[in-house]
Length: 106
Image (tube, rainbow, N blue to C red; front, side):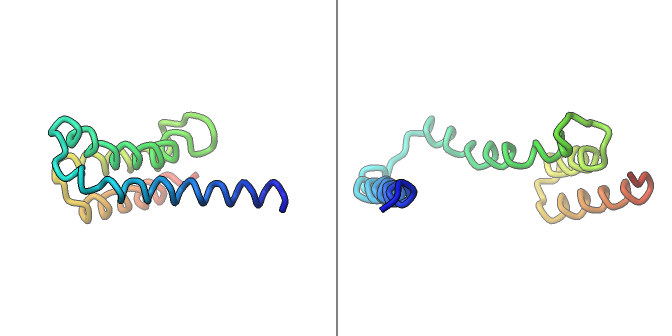
């Protein structure tokens, strides 16, 4: 077997082991301390921001705060913050992006 196959096999075994170990001790984690719960609630928004923010700030590989995506993203973020409505946020963000691109193509 080549080194690539050994790497894939070891990665699979490692992933399975991590998941299985969590399931083996899950009965002990029924009561999560409040401080840990607050920290764990912040992981999904942080991961989403890490994935989405570079597309807004650096779409072409350099910082460009005057491009359409950034303006629409800021507007969508304000709508999300004020309303906490995902559908309205998507509609306003996409509408703003389309309108900005229509008015100022380029």
